[in-house]
Amino acid sequence: MKLLLILVALLFGVIVTGMTLLQNGSLQHYLDTHPEVSWVPAADYYIGEGYYIMGNLEASATYYQRVADRFPNSSYAEDGYFNYLQAVDDMNVPRMEMVNKYSEYLERFPNGSHAEVTRRRIENYRNSRH
Image 1: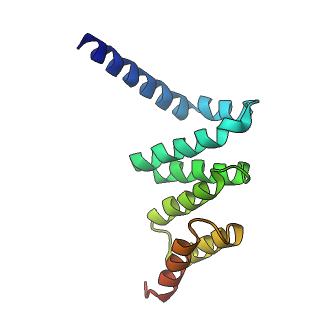
Image 2: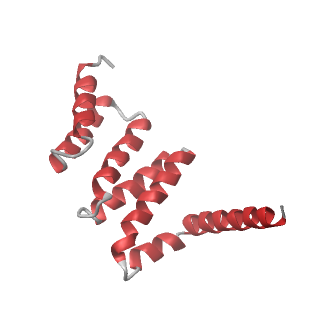
């Protein structure tokens, strides 16, 4: 029981520290200037995931877009870009604007793993009356 309490306290401390570093920009600066870039796309991607889960769509979109723009050759680039679009779409951007944004995804990743979903969304948005 005592070990479980210690683990919970440690986890809480890590979460609070992480949130503090995110809010004051220290983590972002560290990621932007870190010499070993190979793990930075994953870090940005999962920070975006955390923000998305917490409902902070703007911050989520920012981190997802960073992955796609800064690391276009990483294994996270396509999913990051699609998740960026999803976060923006969830912010209730006008549908015709989303058609343009989703079309950009298809230009960038014509055979991507989200291409079929993207095509359907474009078609649905073009055919909707709203």
